[in-house]
Length: 261
Image (cartoon, rainbow, N blue to C red; front, side, top):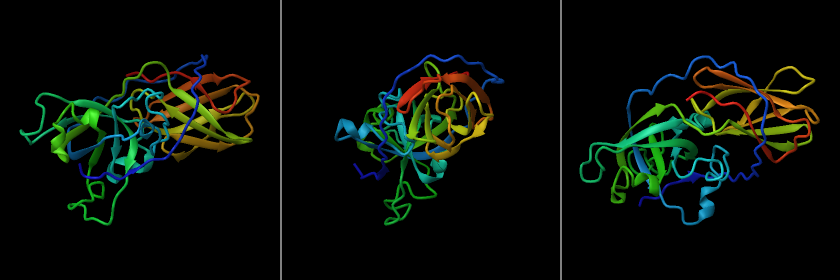
């Protein structure tokens, strides 16, 4: 197997789901699946179970976060500086009857970044270099569409709506007035365009993307119930009121409303 250079950023958190009172102002359902596009895919085999923890989207332990092994690292032209994190794709093997498993496709979530290797040309070893559209898949998922000996396979992919169980999850981290919120388990478009947060004594405050789907703000919001307004890349906005109770604390995860899927 050709070596794959993945950017792995460690991020750990404890998950404690807390019920929330919420309301939704979501309009219609997200747009249907997009057209098929061409790319290539390789695989990696985790040498250690801890390799499933981390990733450039900040989801931490992918099993605990609900993504399992149905995940993908994306090349620069697809990763969109982390904007694409959480988006869902249908992928199928094409053009190689020796290695493709006919009639199969997989659904994966973007959870990581395949960093470019400028020591090689894009057409000679730099698989994730621009302008290549490239997916890096766990071998367990790769083998659902192709024989592992294929290594670097031509594929087709398309964006689809994400289907998730339960509500969006908001993991609050930070210290003092610095709040970092990881948002995961997002249905519909899957990826997030904008986030606002509101305490009981504040208006809606815009948050900034830190990295992946980690959003941050400097604001004194302790001892206030927290509400969130999340806008997906499809333009749909969902408001979850009082997601975190007044006595929320850092390191906990709370569950809010969910987009239609």
